[in-house]
Image 1 (spheres, rainbow, N blue to C red):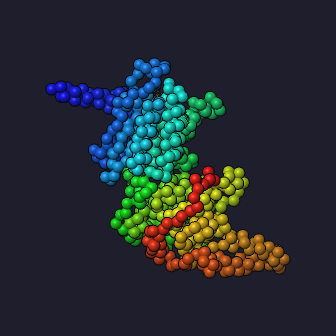
Image 2 (tube, rainbow, N blue to C red):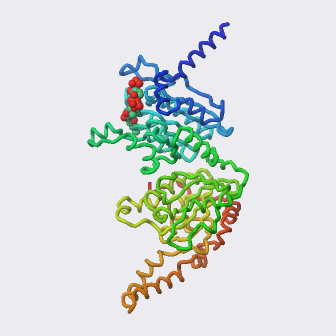
Image 3 (cartoon, rainbow, N blue to C red):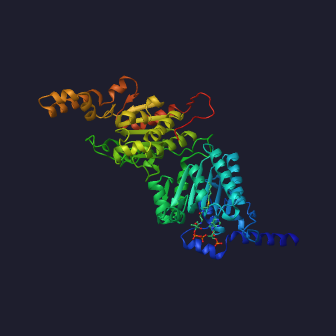
Length: 514
Ligand code: HXC
């Protein structure tokens, strides 16, 4: 009898906490097209696999009437569950409770599940929906953020960290997602900013909506802070589930292998690149013509589209793909594309994912804007990331590989294990036009028919240098290959690199050009 009563009391307490901030606040949440924190967790994890912890934790605020307020679960749900039968750590902020604002105990719940995830070697998924530092708790809220950021940094490169922004992510809150590996946002729902429209209006006198300041489109297209854009929470959760199929659970493992599948027949590798060397094409078609089932899972699709990054499988095993995109800015490297690629390369290297690079670019983007935006500093990141990476690195030079771009895109000189070039590859210091204009300037100027001489000199240069054979003759390229052999060559390269173990000089850590 006494046990039945105690159990009934326990269920009552649980029920009270489960309602979060109350029926009205929950209705408001749902009216905004948002799920509740617990429903989000359930939608991401395997059915019935979620175990919640610290449900009865209470906030420690004492000022501004907080001592009389109860905040169920202190506005954040934490626990462990499973995805594809494998364990994960998860937290979800509950906006219905004090706007999901972060006080000290709220932060402690998050840091506890972070500590667990690091110790257990399991991925951590964080769902952010919060008004930021709980104003009533003052410096204690700031302390909470600091404790989260330091753990994000500790976990970086050890376990995959995934951030989902499903509501406001305001003030200090933005820096936890920024320190994690992948950030997911949803149209009209996600809003990320350091200082909100009110502050901007007061300080700068400028009016801007939250959407235009830091909505999902802004964060995926302009700032590059977010990696995946979805139209609904359900679509977002499908994206997360797909990502998880490509990555390992921690840095001591490899991603799960799947049964190999050939590429789909509609992607014919020999008919994608146009004959005219200045004509663009979609490098994603090349990737799809090579990878299993033509299934390419693109990351940061809408940001710095002049470079394409993402995951695919070859012979059943995950690879990280980087490709110049001739469709956008001729595939040049610039500030943003260098940042985008460098970070992805470091993720793959940390998590034992071989890198496959497809090269077709005229070089780094020239211009005052790029120079003043720090293309030297940012461009160096991709050099650093490729040079630092010790996973198998395979490079395919499809067409143009000029100047600094040739070196930067995982050349032999940065440590590529295998470099292959198509017969149409042009590997040189610069394009034939530019080169002829510089080295034959006097001859062209003094000729009786400068245009004809220029044409001849361009042809001469093209003949001599705009091909893969000079690089192949010097061993910078391992093999000139028939395009239709590309998949076989990459699969073989990865197979023979399985036991690759590259020892580097001991150091505390390097100093990347952050
Ligand atoms: C305490 C907060 C809160 C906060 C929201 N609430 N944010 N309580 N601290 N930071 C409470 C509200 O008082 C309200 O309580 C409930 O949550 C819902 O908020 P609403 O404003 O009614 O919701 P909405 O209209 O949807 O607006 C959401 C919002 C807005 C845009 C997030 O609340 C807002 O601007 N909040 C402040 C955001 C901000 O400036 N944060 C930065 C804090 S400083 P009731 O009781 O009425 O339901 C910071 C610095 C850290 O984070 C730096 C570390 C590096």
